[in-house]
Image (cartoon, rainbow, N blue to C red; front, side, top):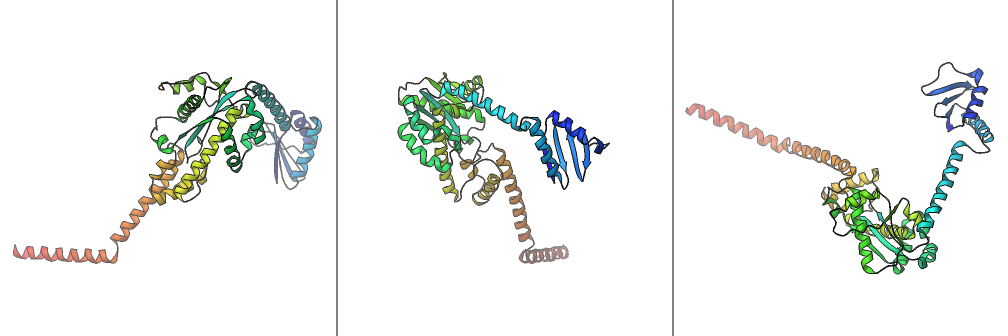
Length: 357
């Protein structure tokens, strides 16, 4: 049994003092102290971690956990740091929310940028102060916690009341511009969605907010070739937690993305996995085997690393398969017989030719 956790300096000192007579002369790399007691090896590392190894490791580990808690007012160092960070994050979020939450705002967010299959979807939405209670009742404030099923239930209610503009960047569009990196794609789509929404009405907004994915100067640099660029934007991280219009944009984009993935699944005859992991690679290999490699241009983002993994496997299997087929044809009984007959005829002809000559 092995138990590892981090301890404070004062617990470390107590531990070294306690195991002093059980101390080992030699210690492993990066360890400052090692001792053995009743079949349990205790190792202290420079990082502040302690490792208990042995049959009764859990007993010794629990004893020192209690000591750690006692010396640190009932809390482990990791727990204290986590609590402090949570408090700090909550305070910062509260301050940010005061700027973005209870206002009339236009917010934009994207979905699909981390998925190998499916399009990139961006939605800009307008939320007035009057609509805040309605959206909170639907659970939009905690948009990240909503499941796909919940999104399919909630978003149709949102789009009946909240003005929005959605831009879908299909896989074909995406693959036709391999020179664009993902941030440039996002910048173009955000700008298009915001301008498209503003054309629908003369909205009374206080701020236009985007979930920050790059520095503002880079964002506008990506748009230098665009003839019409909206510039009065607030860029902030974790924007969907702070601004309801961004949260609405995120939910509507997720809703549209789910619908688009359903279309691709129907076309391929199987549910398409999200993300860019091993399951995606396996699924990609299956559809390439079934439909050919060109199917990826219509359904996936070809500049992802998944493409190499999928096509590498397909290439080697294709080469091996073709080699196997050619070998079977070449060494089949019929071909061996035909080859033998041909060689015999050639020998007879050569023989006759020599006699005549």
